[in-house]
Length: 289
Image (cartoon, rainbow, N blue to C red; front, side, top):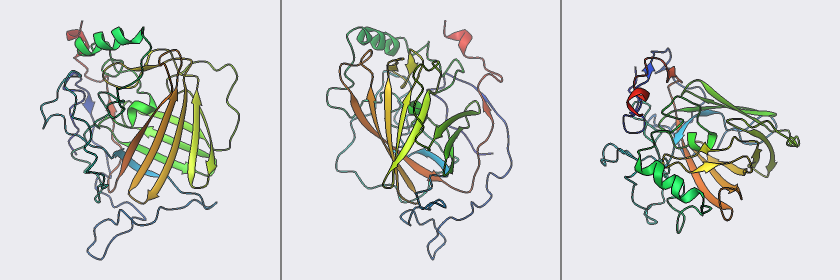
């Protein structure tokens, strides 16, 4: 059974069950003459000719916090080196999945950081200082999709011409993105993943999401989305091995202006999702009071 990364600095101890097919070869993977995965091969296509996002993914901006001694939300990774822009040319190792640089602070690469409204500044500061003891993730609640892109867990995309389903191995979570350009609801009931509808712009899938819950955490520092949030994802699969998701958040309740970040994903092959149920044998929350 593959080893899972310690979640958020060992604040959470979840039970991981063994599963089948962890080393079963993934069908349809383009390979080079030496048998290695051809990450730069053309992206697969759906029956309608659009890019197929199906596959198992993890962050393409991997950052091993443990190796760098970063074990709390106070310890941020350094800014990204602009000289290092080359995408990883091998699949992610399913036995060593780690979080992204943006896991702690999703706005780490924005000049000046996230543009918080004044009321949110002390809240984020407090959550950082108290080691995020009220973090919904470590209390076994669902991760919002923006946060899930950077967490040390696998995401499985199942893509059809009318629907993109994202399965999160953490707590067996799921998200549905309807790709039939249906209108968003006028008065949505707030939910963990919101309501997502999408349409194509060339080979880019443009996803609009509303209807999120207030105080939806999107990073370990406690940055949030509110019910006023409108989230747009511009999702591309430039080649077989990579996804690029350009995210724009317009949430006037939480932020003084819209902001945009790019969240990258990297393919994982020859493995499958496994059970990772947070509440099973969970023993950490009692120590966080």
